[in-house]
Image 1 (tube, chains in turn red, orange):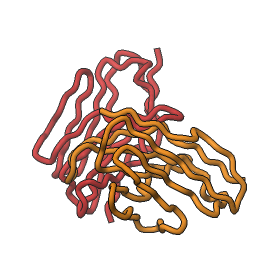
Image 2 (cartoon, chains in turn purple, blue):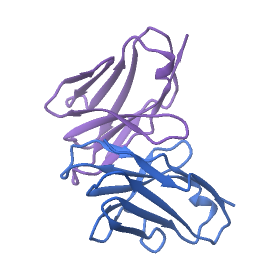
Image 3 (cartoon, chains in turn red, yellow):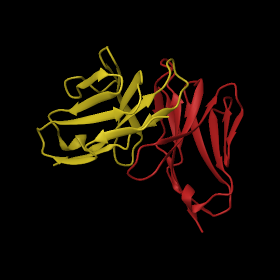
Length: 113
Length: 116
């Protein structure tokens, strides 16, 4: 079955640095991958979608890469700010059902001043 | 985008009772989803609810335990029936504009359920 791995340990970085979060998957090849942000007590908020034929996508300070050979996506936040502190979830298209997402457990990012 | 509201935002219920969670969207959507997020866990899809058809349940979830209604294109309900403490979780609805996959999902704020 499909398996998604995100670093369960919190990532602590200093303000202004670049945060890099990792999402690894096994056992299948999704057509697309999404990243979401989730704050405590709230639902996830969509950030970026990248398709299998795209190597990289950017949005303001965010950058996502998608390496289908390594079966890995990297999520970067440049010039990080304390307001970026949250849990970041990756989600992959399930495979046999394109409208179904499978979510990773998320990585908590803490940006300190 | 979409604005999604859920009611109630939280509840504490006794085992053996049932709770119905409402999900309201500010625009018409085809695809609505119900998820469960247990403490420290990822989101797990319970079912997909499309207007005019029966909900499609994921492995491990059954209609008798989690009946779903989808009476129109802006509203859905999820009932958690005959609750036990293991049902304590956050329940989220989400919507997707478009069909066939490859679209982002918009989530409601969630309903935090505690079963005692």
